[in-house]
Image 1 (cartoon, rainbow, N blue to C red):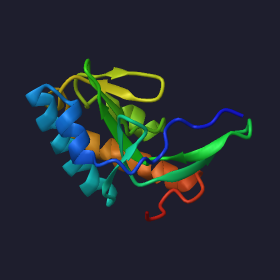
Image 2 (tube, one colour):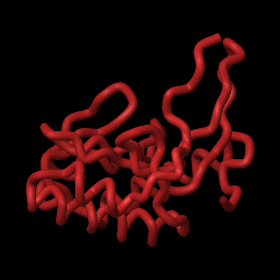
Image 3 (cartoon, rainbow, N blue to C red):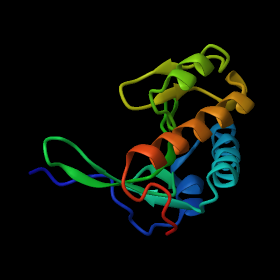
Image 4 (cartoon, rainbow, N blue to C red):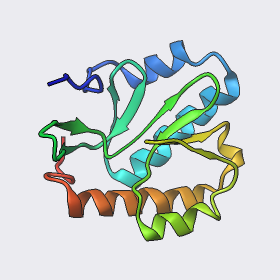
Amino acid sequence: MAKTKTEYTGADVLDFISSYVDNEQKKADSFQLVTLLCEWSGFKPKMWGPTIIGFGNYHYKYASGHEGDAPMLGFSPRKAAFSLYVYSQTESSEQLLASLGKFKMGKACMYVKKLSDINTSVLKEICMESIKYLNEHHECACRKE
C-alpha cells in the first residue's frame, strides 16, 4: 500500500512562508490565512508535507483499506494560486460556494488567486461546515494535537 506523502513535518510555518513565498501580496495573504484558519479551527498552524500549512488533524480510512492522518483545514501558497483544503462536499457547502467569490474548484481543494477575490465570511462558514462534517464522519476528527 502506498505511503501517505502529506504528513506532519515539524517545520516552522512562519519560516516556510517567509522563504517560500516570493510575492509580497501572497505573503501578506498567507499570514492572514494563518490567522483566520487558526482562529476558526482553534488549532495552531503546522506544516504537512513540504508546502501545506494545516490546522488540527483527523484520521481517515477508505474502503480500500488506505488510511492516514490529514489536517482538518489547510492551505498551500502555490505560485499560481492558493490551494485551500477547507471544503467538504455537503449540501450546505455547495450552497455557500455561490457567495464565495472568484475561485476554481479542484478535485480536493479550491484555488484562489488572492484573498481579496473571495468573501472571507463565507470562507469561514465553509470551514466551519467542513469541521462539522469531519467530526461527524471521521475518527478523532476533533482531537487536539
